[in-house]
Image (cartoon, rainbow, N blue to C red; front, top):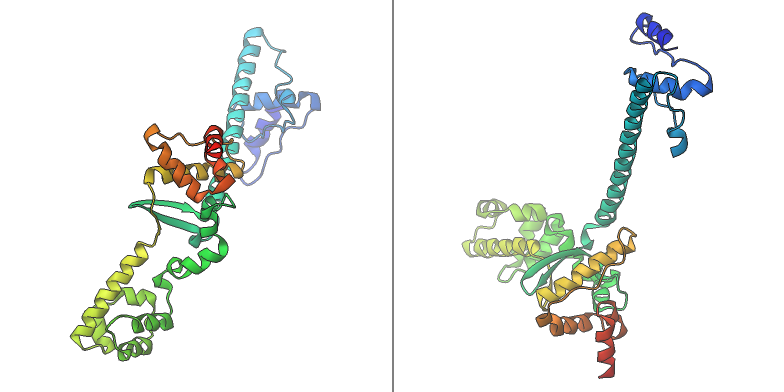
Length: 299
């Protein structure tokens, strides 16, 4: 069958596909072994249904040395196939893991200023404990109202929004606001304005130009530094946030149940206070050891 296959390959053109040799079912696995052994890669490996059938039909018809060499080669190919299958599964799992974090809208990415230390997370992490202060602070209704303009960004402001902003700049007369409206300056253009641009628009008074340039710079800085202030120890809040992240990943069935945070002895009292502030009453048990909660109840 292999010789016939080679003859067909020799006389067929490159555009023609040579058919795989047709033989009895009981010899198909053996034929496949020979084809792979001889480097005839155009023959596809047979589709195996389970581990047993994949390793069935060892070669026994030749001398012992040849049989062992062929079977060893075939076993190596099986091992490589298993490794490839395992890698493919790992890639699928990793893709699922990444998707679970990148999904959602940009406004759901939260930037926290924890007593000067910047921490970033998503709203799903902060709201994972329903009865907590964090869940109430960052729930859908409150956070939409609190952060919609900032999260959308000054760059996306319309000309009308820019004009309204200019009206509210201290020391700027309504005439300047009308010039912005007349020139249809949007948010992206507002941030790109310089003194020359303001003069071309018709803003000629030097004092007005200085006030506008100062306000534009402050606006640009504020959009870059949008964050929610957390006035607690970065160490303690960081421990809480790390645990909430793990709980969120656990909720996606990607990891096992995480252990409670390990807190240094000199920070335990402060840590408990922060936990009880953000997780009042029984919700504190979510982050505190049972013994610690029992002692608190006795008091």
